[in-house]
Length: 226
Image 1 (cartoon, rainbow, N blue to C red):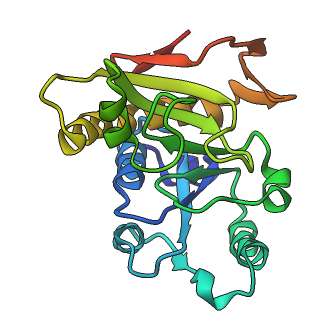
Image 2 (image 1 turned 60 degrees about the horizontal axis):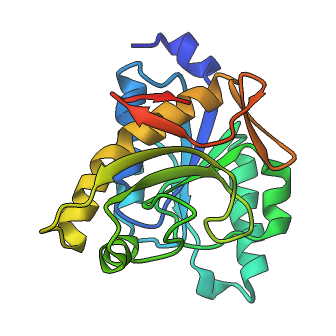
């Protein structure tokens, strides 16, 4: 476990979340156990009653939700949200179940410093209902992806993926549960590379240790490999 001085010097994360916050909890657990050298300095979202905010409050982390309906436009909401982000002075932003598109204007200053976890093997099944769509499509393999965020829906450069087999008797719920199990180590491992300075985004290309990765890193035994 990190000392207070080491924790204070760790890279600062702001998490954007709209839902239950299970990926947020995975990050908090990894930080507490010394597996992720970072600290979450704030949790922001768009749903005041989201369990993710309650998780943050329980952990003593500042948490706030802004309601989109209180703003005249999506751009106005994004500007207000990112004013709160900037006030927290993060080094990186993590979208962990954040269910709104972000505009190019607010994203521009954070290029290469904001990532999202999505429950599919991108570029397949962008958007919602990924597990039901995967089953309907008859794929034999599904999973999760972490990617750099751009203004395109789930369209930013993919950094890393974790794969699971689709079983013949799967429904959307059973497949979702199995994917969720790999989401947690995938997100933690990817953030470990990001906060250590090993990952970068240059000209829309992902670099690991200053070398271009042509295909996403793959999770195996909770570690990422090319």
